Length: 114
Image 1 (spheres, rainbow, N blue to C red):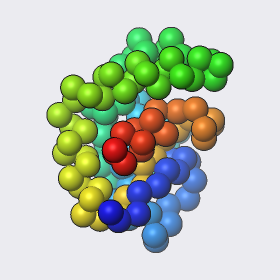
Image 2: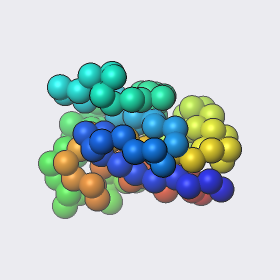
Image 3: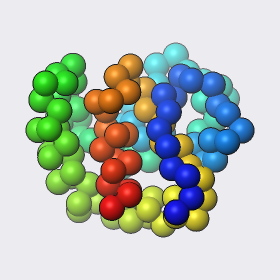
Image 4: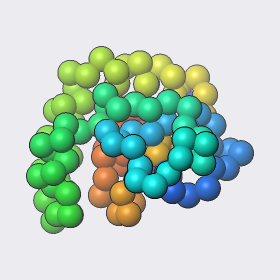
């Protein structure tokens, strides 16, 4: 499997990012399309708004979020499409959260590795 990694969307694009895939439902505040250099916006793989709001700012409830988001991802046909894409080429999943350990991209990365 080619390299698959995570990166905050506000960090500068790098030559070794490969395909840059935004995995948030909302476009990152204050970031232009030119500066972000997004190749794919996988909006349909982001957690639904209710789930995102319920757990935002609550890292103590991380495992609950992981379980709920995993259930959402199970039935999402876009997950299989993204799996096929990242098996073929290097990719970087981009997220806007300041918390690099507790965000949907972390959960999505693990789902893609399974």
